[in-house]
Image (cartoon, rainbow, N blue to C red; front, side, top):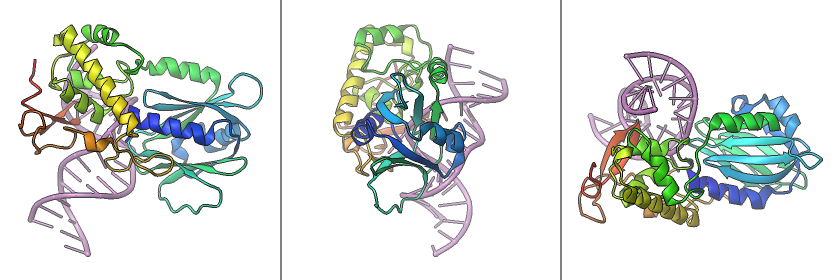
Length: 279
DNA sequence: CCGGTCACCTGAGTGC
DNA sequence: TGCACTCAGGTGACCG
């Protein structure tokens, strides 16, 4: 499900729910989603306090402290397609399916981890493992961390087609299928365009549109097309502003052509053949 | 390096 | 109702 705007929304909601709170217990109902094993990660987390919650691309990173000034544990979460966090107050009845883990807090309240397709995960890492993880991930900057000129510079040397490149988290982190299709439409760039054929001006425009779309999407708390939800169960509203994503067969709001769907890099790809010409 | 395919899972939607 | 089939917001492994 979630791309940058959805993960950012979840992270902001997590901050108000769990920052500064101490973990009383961890229950795991599906062992394969946690690392190390359920026993060990429960022991690592129990009694620790959540000091920070941050987004790195589409990852959620919790810093946990037990005592002393340095973090003892990093909890890395990737929601993949259908992962969700839900907040449950003490005593509330839980009827949700696919809840694979529950983090309980001192003073009450539980954070539920739910994931229909079971692709997502929660990994507990010590500081050394966290460093190695960062290196091995080699995440690119997210679109807000660089300006248009830097973006154009990174693009200049790259081979391959623009859409798969924008989905590559080592090149740029945070974008997924929805926002890539929307940004390419807004910048009038065909998804198959060779990256190196984009002029500086068009690369600058692409970055501008990416940032604009992501900013608007964050303001509207992301896109809910099927099962994305925030902590309270509330969905986002940006899906109403999608111009091409899953709108094939509809008329392009700019030129009146029919929106088309094709497959690029194995992903469903939506674009307007009138507005988005191949370079 | 690049691209294609599959695998990981469950469910929603469509057409017969 | 039921069955078969396609598709789904992500990524990593494997292969040519």
